[in-house]
Image (cartoon, rainbow, N blue to C red; front, side):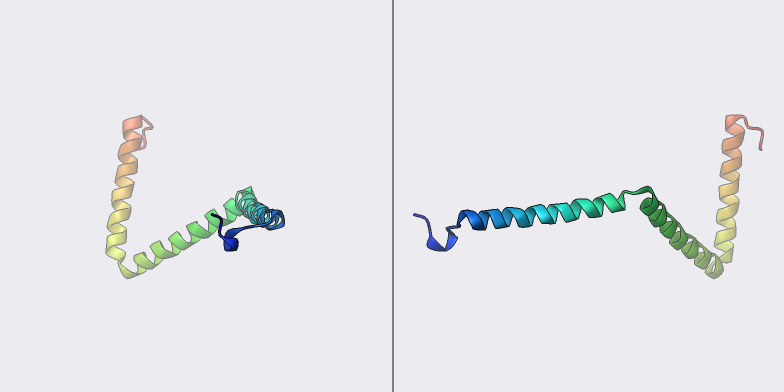
Length: 89
């Protein structure tokens, strides 16, 4: 038996469908904006700026660790260049 409280009219169903369509349209619009090249570039730039600030803060707090990490990174880059035959090392 159908419960009277769950019985919906065609207008109720149509209203729910319209509401769902509007929600979907809004979601698709937000996705469209987030996938534009300018938005992606802005987000990437913001992320990179945050990471650079974090690295700078670490370098200021721990200069010896930063120096050793830079030396190790330089060594690895040099070894990679030598391995590839670029003649940099």
